[in-house]
Length: 393
Image (cartoon, rainbow, N blue to C red; front, top):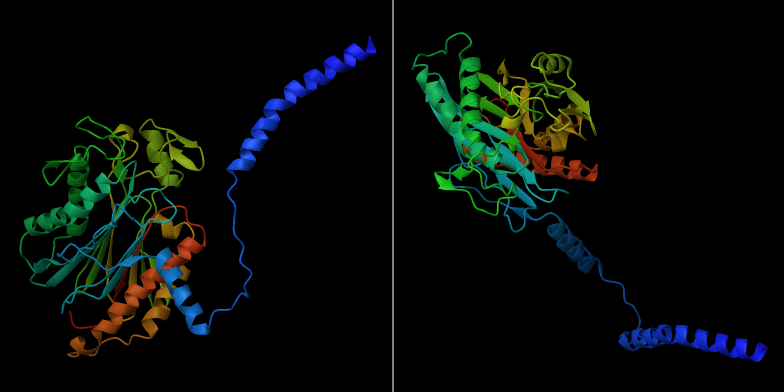
């Protein structure tokens, strides 16, 4: 009896282990054989090690100096949206500037940057347009802002007449009109330059309106005597004056006391879900687009007009990918260090040493983006650095 039980147990064990053994043999047969060669490992020479480091850095931060031919930097290549770094075009009137736009740890690049030297000419001088747009939901609203915003601002400036000075509150009025027009156009921005946008757009909507897509906008108009900043969202503009950072915009966050009160008055709610969000969705209280969140999310910008002075050093415009991890003081100090090696051009000698300022601005923008990535910024990072040191405009 015991013999029969033992034999049956052995048979059961053999039957259950047979498939396992067969599978194990199959795995062993599939293992590739590696050939090991015994040889002494040699250390690379210092020159070879330096070349390897340079290749690794170029691979990690691929920099393309490209533009759209109109003084505006192009966005990153969709096939490789890593970094776009741009130095300013040669101009005797526009301040020198540098631009860097990095996709960072995001899957898609939704930031855009617009630079338009001499986009408006008045009796008081020439005005230059700088803008940073941080899209959310998809990139086509930010792209539409890049292509259209400067033109709308120029049209509104010209509509105020050709007098030497703008009327009281003129800049505020025209910026509000420009942002309102851009917001109305963003609702139907599934078309770009009159052409239907591509069907592989990430928002994957086939409707003529994309109401769940939007973009922040921080715009600076630099003139001979004034700097005008209009901001809508959580991108930011900071002026460095005699080593002191001066914010020219205030982030529009849903938990900002005045914004929270405005949202509640409109019948909306701010829900804390991974931070303060309008209706638990959007982490900013003002933006262009986002039709499904109106009237809680508005496109009205806050406008600041600052008089230029001899102690002005630089202007920094950037998306929240930088400001989330870098303070105003640190950003201004980094730019000041880069500009310190580039002396301001003397009157009448701009052509001789202006390129040094140009290079310094580009290097400062690159350093700020690298710092943001090193501090684990999880967003796209776009930075514009403008040299404001006194020169003949």
